[in-house]
Image (cartoon, rainbow, N blue to C red):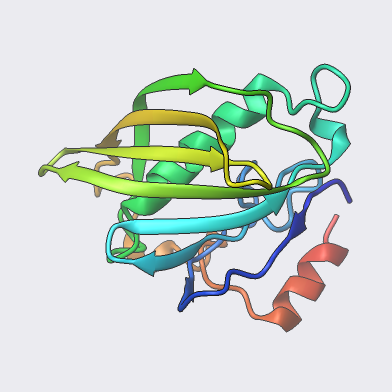
Length: 175
């Protein structure tokens, strides 16, 4: 299994749903990141994650595409704190790479919801290093997935749910 290590967050938190197959959060995706996200306050989400060296570009440095994927996901996740069935896709992601993001080092990802309209929303994502230094950030514009594409009662059947520790163990055996 290729995935990073997860660290506990020392504040009141509520685990968000994960997917089975998503690259960023899919718990059964053997090449995915398997990031777990936690609501920490209204409109704000956090994840603690250590990126495995399998996702490096230059030696010791997380590939820029992986950084973009983490920023994309954490930005979106801020918009589902109060509505885990709000499906949105990214229309625009503006990234600022401030410093190299290291592999095998604990990172803190933070997403903050911005303005939410009927069809679109804005959000931001941030990646902080082990010393709490801002390494990368993004501003995202997201568009709501039309309700006729997914029925909310199908979400769990599609693998979108909060997984218990027992279910986590069984997803590691899938594939």
